[in-house]
Amino acid sequence: MLDCYSNPMNSKLPIQEFIKIDTAEEADSRKQDGLAHLAMRRLFVIYNACRTLLAIVLLSLLIIADGSELISQLDRNMFIAGTTLLLLSALLLVGPLGRVVSESQTQIFGLLLFDITVIALVVGAAGGILGGLSVLYLVIVFAAAAMIRERILATVIAAIAVLAVLMDTAWMVGRSEATLNMLLAAGLLGSLLFALSLLVQVMTSRLAQAEADAVDAKAKVEALQRLNEQIIVHMETGILLADSTGTAICINDAAQTLLGLSAGERVHLLNISADLANQYQEWCEKNT
Image (cartoon, rainbow, N blue to C red; front, top):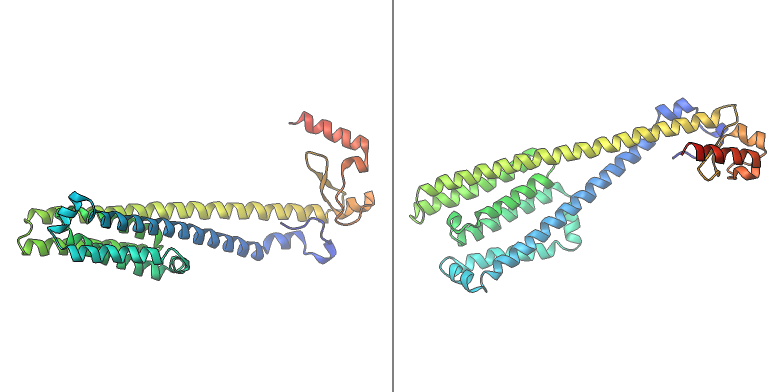
């Protein structure tokens, strides 16, 4: 905010301050970028926490009796390898490395590709679509749609997840481990993945636009406020602005000259005129 006590001889004309507000716009842009980075960081932390929790839950299946019996019938080593990779990568991203990754869209895209590969190992080890773990692809697709700004890249992640589901199911059908009906189920899951991706992308885009509009509206209000303050400062008529307590918050040069005040001096109306302070107090009480 422009200091209303600045010397008019060293400042620009009001209209110049109003029209040329590049510095303020740049500040608002930096603020908006900072908020975007903060929001991205929070989303990334939440997603990585989900990855950690998911890996722990999957590994716990090897300890629980029913889960252990289920996994023992399938590829146990592949299941352990996939969940261990997921857990180790999640723990590595808890520290400063996670902050670096969250600030790069390319690295986030690479992380999501890594997660699809790991989940493909886990799902394949647990019996593919028959094991019920294929729904884990929903988490990755949701995260991609929320964290990746480019819609094309987010859609690519969804497409890769769909291909992973279809290829795994086709492979099982080819080995007679699943029936052709499972291809229909895989297709339905793929459609759900695409629908989720598009829905989250639209919601994220609208939220980002609403936030940008709010920042823009705030910038316009602040610009108008700066214009009003400049008008007050450069008016030849003495103007004094006071808050609800009667303390002067803005005094233009003409008022400073009339009242004999020094530049930048903040005074109470009582120090200027007791009658003026009383009248102002009565006016405030009447209009509140």
